[in-house]
Amino acid sequence: MNIQIVLDPHSQVITTGDTITGRVLLDVRKRSNITAIDVKLRGYIRTSLLSENDMDTDTFKPYHDKHEFLRLSQTLLPPPQARKGFWGSSMALSAGQHDFPFEFKVKSSFPDEVEIAYCIKATATRPDLFKDNLQTTYHFNFRPIEQAWDPMPRLTSVKHQHQFDLQRITPSSETASPDDEYFPDMVRTAAPDRELASILVDARLPKPAILFCNHDVPLDITIRKVNAFSGQLYLQSLQVTLIGYTQIQTQAASRRKVDTWVVMSNCNLDIPIGYPEDAAGAHMALPPMLWRHKPVPASVTPSFDVCGVSRHYELEITLGLTYESSHTSRPGTVWLPLRQPVDLHPDFPALPSPANISSSS
Image 1 (cartoon, rainbow, N blue to C red):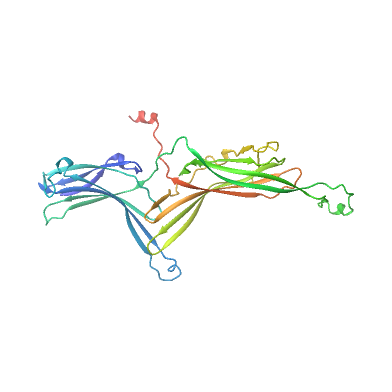
Image 2 (tube, rainbow, N blue to C red):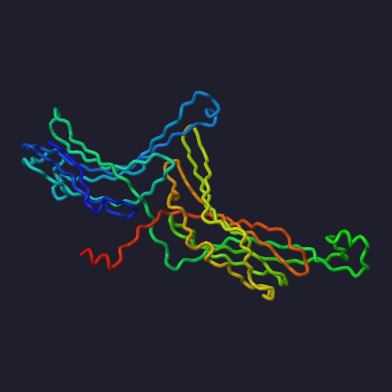
């Protein structure tokens, strides 16, 4: 007698929300009695970690933790309609191949900082105490994906206010000094005045703030004039960085790891933002093409929190701005960082087009 698990062809690529369908095949060489056939879906997570005290020693022993975070089971034999009064009995199977269909609905996700294993186990229980039960295991890979968000999402915003406090230069009416002939870079000035240019940077993401691997960041950046000023604002640089925080906790040790991925980075832009004559309260939008077609790396692990291991993310947007006025000297670049916690979801598979469906059929 032999037992094996066969998944249906459409179940070879498994992701969140999918239904795994397949069959347990029982090859019976001669008439045999079977008490029950069970099939189980299991998910395991294993971590290996050094404590902080062991990291400074020559000899160390890592701590291992293994958890079962997913457990689903079905009884295929006896069938539901025959279970009443069946338990403890057995069913005779004739020689030949018998198949028992099963299905599981998958709703879990996984990290890559730890070892992950998924498997389906099938067991055929025999009533004879001197005959071992039949078992088989089918290992498979699982690719999670979250459900799609609202097509008309609300927005979440992170803001940073900055004020350029500049020295206004007024040319002196004094008679030129003989020294000016030898030191032309020296500028004689009267008492300086101040010029204030206050702005509010607003970076917006859909709410909830969700990013997808291998897709552009759905970002919108505007700058609002808080007060009226006559100078010109320039965008010199823009960088979008994804920061990942991985926390691993075991009974004996814990570790926190920080990783960064630069989604996009541009410098030496010198892009004018708005116009000097814009009134106070005006909103000046940054051109979206700066961060378009620059997707989140596909290799980044989605957010997760399972069995003492978690990964969460922040999106950091850093703007380099300068302000220039005919009445002031041009100051150096000011970098304004903005951070927003985000959830990272896996890339979602592309749906086939109607043309491809019709041509394949």
